[in-house]
Image 1 (cartoon, rainbow, N blue to C red):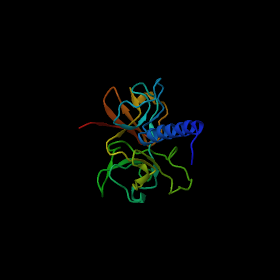
Image 2 (cartoon, helix red, strand yellow; image 1 turned 45 degrees about the vertical axis):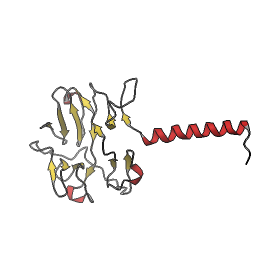
Image 3 (cartoon, rainbow, N blue to C red; image 1 turned 180 degrees about the horizontal axis):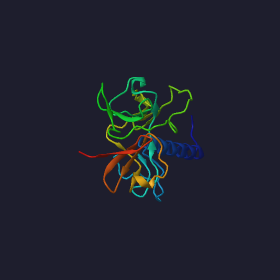
Length: 191
């Protein structure tokens, strides 16, 4: 095949465009809900960042499950809202669920809790550099081994006017993780 000058230039453009596309996909970092001029994450250790560094008024709602026991093949690090006992739970090892809403009163009603829609068990989104090879079960899987997710940050949990059951935020004024079970907030301070 003989390449003309015009076809070489066209091929060069395609190769450059493909290179840019591949490099941007393989090093993707995602931000959701940032209002800053830059949509870049806080630093290179962030895989998924939700909201701005301060002053937010929104949280992240965790996946609802009918019970912790119904989660198929949970892995350490899984966080759910268990609608059977209205608790936010964290899978801290291969056999134990840890109650993150420990001490909070149980909501009297299930208003705002999971709907009756049928689950699509194959639904899955994987974010990270090894996303195509990841087999971890879950709806949202962050597959990077050297990056983390940054929760929505609020100055005070009271900035969220109408929180939903299963909501989670980081409170910047007190450096605490706050989780809402549909009735009240529970707070966790780093060890």
